[in-house]
Length: 353
Image (cartoon, rainbow, N blue to C red; front, top):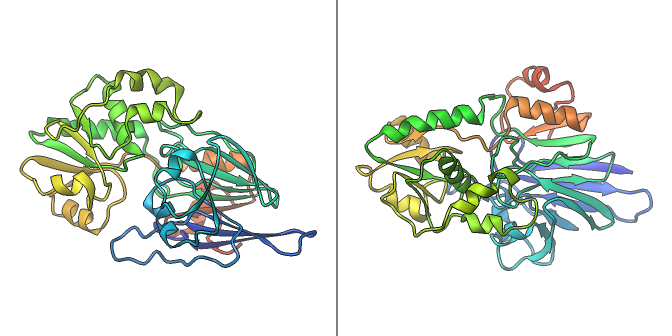
């Protein structure tokens, strides 16, 4: 028995996610090959950085954000693509789709694949492959979300972990407090956000603290969509808040305007960004080039809203998994010893295992 992991894209920097897992069993004539995520480029004009491997048995999509599923547009329609029902709604129409549970197990090519809610976005999951004492892939995850739950996974020998924030360790509560002072600005806050991720999470937080002068653009997921989603999609504690949030027509005159897309290059956000006298843009996630430029010139602001793990979250998950090999993804590791001091001796920068 042999397990080979080839990180085609996602090692060493924030970029498209694409990880090839090859399993060679002693009693099988040919290896089983799974692709974990099929991400697209994060920057306009940038190549996604990987090509479809040959002889794939299945592709698994952790969630519906561009850097994890944007490359599916180029995928052969004959390859089975597995995703949860909420995620399937955002995927290209030509695909050969199969359904993953939010929390549960699926047998694919004779291998048990376990999924659990990843705490990052609507319908987003982590993946655990029952090969070689366990291979765990977190996709993007968070332990702090008040909207999307995180389900603890089984133990695994190899852990491929979202480390988008590096060893940053500020809490989501600190992020929320930092955002509150922008409410004092005379302009409305324009917040370009992922439509199925932090958009509704921010709206539900504002509602929970008694602030109701916000509006979700029509391209953002609505409270009733999440409430009607598959079991395990939403934290039980936030359900009463969501039930109190009635969907209303998009109101660009609200004090806080939440709209897609998160890069501000499309959707309602791109339109409203052309009105700087009316809106104060506040980015809370990945900054593409034009947004970095705007922030550097003080035409926009950046205040992170945690949707990825902090250092302490990574440490908690590494300890829980009991992994012998841990590969932090989506971030540059300039000092491997620093990462090992923070997370343990299992950390490696290798992209081929």
